Image (cartoon, rainbow, N blue to C red; front, side, top):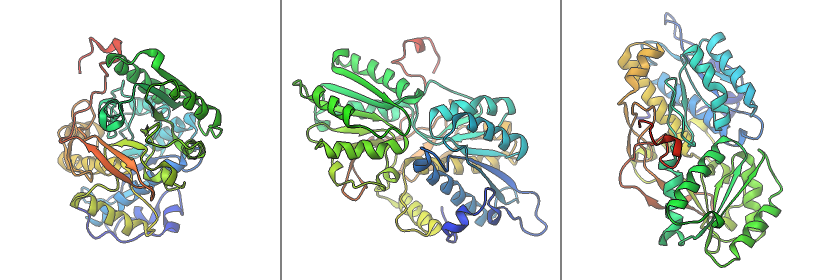
Length: 411
């Protein structure tokens, strides 16, 4: 599906907030279709979000090489909310009210998504959100292309409790202090209780964004694990705090066979910045890994490497979810014969894409995708050996059955 995409230099990628090279229409062509890019390029989340900016630019160039959409070229409008949650809302309003974008791809953290949600609803914008999250949300103005808890967090913990994951009997829930980790861990605590894991065998620790001193917390986890029951770590740590966290696991000699950890926000991009050798065997749960075999991923990797022109740059799950969402949006625009939000929204339902994960994914009326679940072991080179995957793509449950208030909510 990726054809005729020329390489783009790093300098061109970073040159201007509005990417003019991508935005210039051919002579005689109608006005461009504007694509907003709302990802942090500075601050604590830049380690994760910069690659998503690059992915949207890649897809715009890819679509333009195919003739654009509706006879028009696509133009990127890039802003930097700088890992500042109120600034996300301000930049979202700028994209919608000033730049008049037709669609936006953006956000990583749930706090940033919740910051912009009322703006998109007020101005009837369209946001594609590409990262796994805690669920408990559904907006007609957002399409969620990352995983809901039943497509990542719950299967990962189920794996830890089983024989392949070490038969864990105690769980340490470590997270960054904001809505995604706290809500996900509330869901996981309900799930663990349903499996016979008592609250006394669960600990929770939360730290601020950018936290760097992990010695005390990792020591407490070791002490918790020393009380006679097999223990595992479930990490909802986000952003650049992952680098010192994993470094401290290595410093304290915590090996996967002793206290395995599974992460929900650590992928190839985050591991590229650290020595992964002490972390071999620790786990991450996603819906895509760069190491996935098959022609769909081979095509994705070739396209990315050609575009980014840097052999050290990796791919990861939110990048793949961005590509899937972009292709579905392009298909919906073509089907609607307009970029008008209400018409495109209706055509989004039922859109299917053969994703780079090797599964056909479908957008449902709850604005969430069906996705496979994959669990991978960290390798010394920062890649993942896939040790588990579901045979089919699983529809999302964005309202968790482990939240009591959802008992009467229609799914």
